[in-house]
Image 1 (cartoon, rainbow, N blue to C red):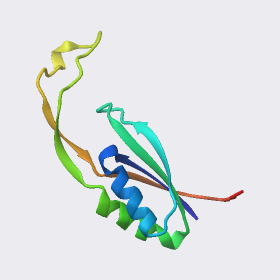
Image 2: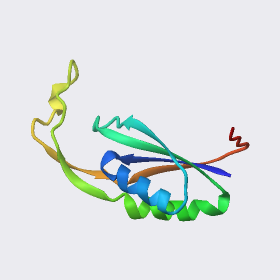
Image 3: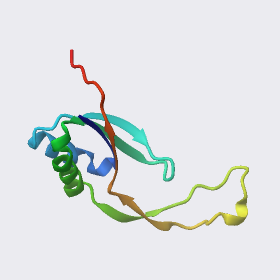
Image 4: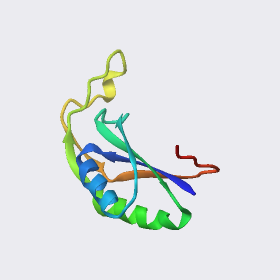
Length: 109
């Protein structure tokens, strides 16, 4: 058995949740916040059999697309202002960061 932990942008959360249900995969959704952009993310916890890992990854890949977004940087507080850029910059957001971990034991009560 495996535990898939997928961190995705909030924008893709509803679409991924619907797709997982459509393919009969159960998931737990957790609200999370990214450290770099300080924006909302959703973390999905998905427990699957070993042979279901690839189909789940395909569902995630189909529903979580990366895109470019303009972001206004946060001014440094007490930090070095020399490297601070005062205008919006374009960054890549979205997609998914996925961790796959082995599960030694699983219980459902």
